[in-house]
Length: 89
Image 1 (cartoon, one colour):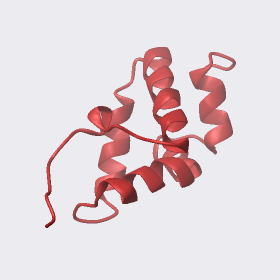
Image 2 (tube, rainbow, N blue to C red; image 1 turned 30 degrees about the vertical axis):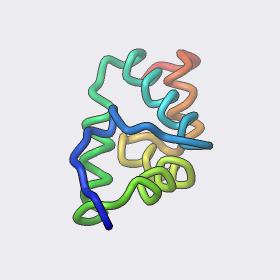
Image 3 (cartoon, rainbow, N blue to C red; image 1 turned 180 degrees about the vertical axis):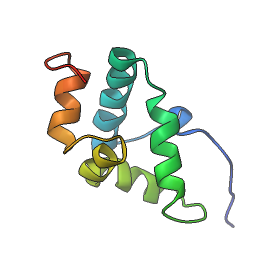
Image 4 (cartoon, rainbow, N blue to C red; image 1 turned 90 degrees about the vertical axis):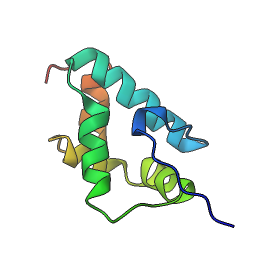
C-alpha cells in the first residue's frame, strides 16, 4: 500500500545527512529573514509531481549545491557561510 500526504518542507522529518541540511536551512532563514523553506520547496516541486520521503531526503542530503543554486548562492559552502553569519548575503 502506498500513502501520500501533503506536508511543507519545513515540517519534513529528515534523517541522516539531510538533518544537517535542514539545520543549515533553518539557520539561513534566521540569519537572512528570507522564507528559505518556501523557496526550496518551490524548486523541489519543479523537479516533478510529488515524491516519496526517501527521494526528498536524498535531495536534501546529496543535492546541497543544487539547493544553494536555487537560493541564489554559488554553492553550498557559500550558503553555509551566510547561514553561520561569516559573510553577509
